Length: 206
Image (cartoon, rainbow, N blue to C red; front, side, top):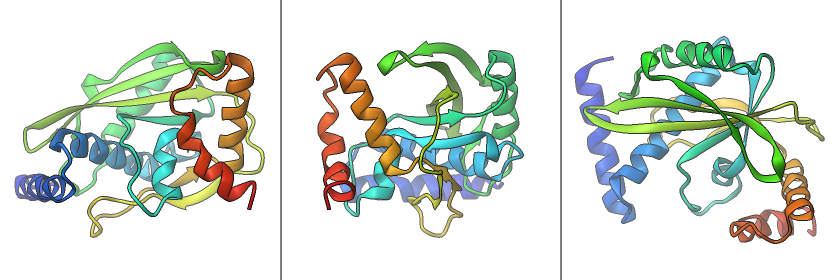
């Protein structure tokens, strides 16, 4: 990957941020998440992960949805911290001519506990785009059952001439079921519940 590529991509993202009236760092984080998903999809570990969570809204909505600062995945296979760390060091080394550099030596993995009591791991990787740096966060849960089967999807990209991630994702029904389970378990405590009304109305009540 050339220095010119990184500089060109950064300039295009700056222009995109201005056109959308969005902070550049927000666009940079979104781009980093998109490009780590691409590397996952191109790696030997692609079959170990499903995309879930707020990034799926980009697939569901024609209009831009709220930005998120992390990716949520369902993982299969070894879930110990050392194994996950090595997996993401491998992923960070996947070559892609997109200007983004992920530092394999920066990978940090820790245990987390999220909504509905589910436990998992959090991966943090440092990313660099022509000296614009950001923190890329991926939260991974393990062992959930997926019904119906996962869907193969092409994830939308910010710059249309770059290759898109092609990966398995949660069906919308599973996403809604998990959200309803969290409501039943925790009560109406999730301030982002409104995010799920549109897909709930469209796919279940239509």
